[in-house]
Amino acid sequence: MSLGKGADAYLDVGQDFSIGYTRHDGELVTLHLEERFSFRVTEPDAAVVLTEG
Image (cartoon, rainbow, N blue to C red; front, side, top):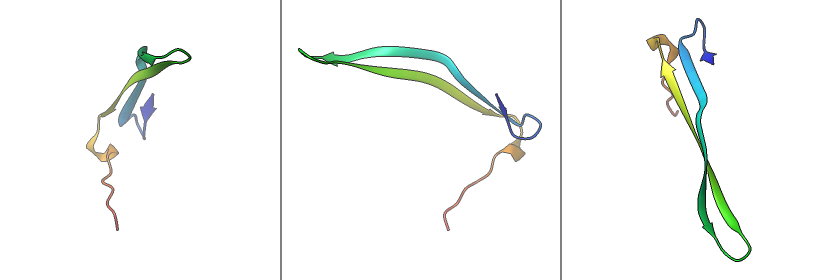
């Protein structure tokens, strides 16, 4: 997915997705989900500095 005017930035989501085991007891199994994403800026003008105030 490209973000910004003229594809100044790219967001890649869902390249790696996994389900992991955390723990279990007599009644409950706890799993966790992990997903990798990356954000790549191809033009310096695509980034904006946010400041408080």
